Amino acid sequence: MDGSAQMNRPVPSKIEAVLELFKVAGHAEVNPPILQPADVFLDLTGEDIRRRLYLTSGSDGHDLCLRPDFTIPVCRHHLAQDTVSLPAAYCYHGPVFRQRPAGLGEIPQLGAESLGRTDTSEADADLLALSVNALETFGVRENSIRVGDETLFAAVLESLDLPNVWRRRLRDLFGETDKLSAAIERMAGGAVSDDEGRDVRLGFLSALEGADPEAAHAVVEDLLSIAGISAVGGRTPSEIADRFLEQAALASGARGHDKAAEILSAYLSLTSDGARAASVLRQFGNEFGLCLDKPLAAFEQRMMAVDQKGIDLSRLNFAAEFGRRLDYYSGFVFEIHASKETVEGPLVGGGRYDKLVNLLGAEEDVPAIGFSMWLDRIAASVEG
Image (cartoon, rainbow, N blue to C red; front, side):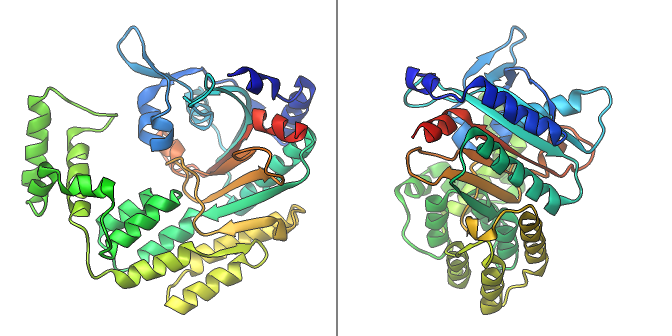
């Protein structure tokens, strides 16, 4: 970490006070190893984190990385225990490592994770309230809370008459508003961006377009075999072939999806405070004839639980486009920012990741939610 960031750290007594707050709430403190298997993060964290990993290798040749976040290591710690019981709750304090344009990329964090609670609305409210209380313990009492929900976006997608390849592509881009908007425009037959244009010009993708899927799979797997490649980023040749076929379909563009593009653009433009968000979403669904009853009921139940925790819903800023740039998030997400624009980036970021523990080896899906606190930003906010 650069010198200025080292100066911006909360005093140890405040950190201990927040850890004690977490422990009183039932979170056991853990300290996962700094060295982690790289393939897990390559597969599950998203492009933004993947390109910023500090990579190395062990004596056995396996790829390793310095932990870029705590959520995956905490879940791996949970699964490695001799007796794994649920629900379980953990907290942590230590550095994460992500390459940055300036500084060494060692970032002090503190956070909490909750695994296995089936009362999901109450768990969401508990973790959001816990993060707000932690910030107050650090002395940050004026802040803005931004919330979003990927399940609502997924429900809108499922209600539309779209090819699966486009549903998958758009959901993968959720949270990256500029890229998502460009993809929606292209889906409706709009202009091709420079990046997409390069894909169109790739002869290999053009050759795959419209090919028999089994034959295309065989071609890709044969090429990888000739090159001596058995896997890329943890993906098998079959998975790589699927990706090539998907890119070929996307590169060909689309026509006839103007109405779907209109609906998606209208949805992504929705904003409201937490108190009015459900009615805004219901009005949108009625206007376009979409059935969003199930995700809306869950959204309303969560807002009621948050209100019961003493958080004024008018403090919450709901944005339909808002998603966090980590692939494992699957539903409710939130960020807390300093009220005054003295610090770039969120002080707290978190959300629900109900599929992650299963992807890491659990036999069943485990509902889960957690958050991380950026201690250097919090210190800078307090000083500011």
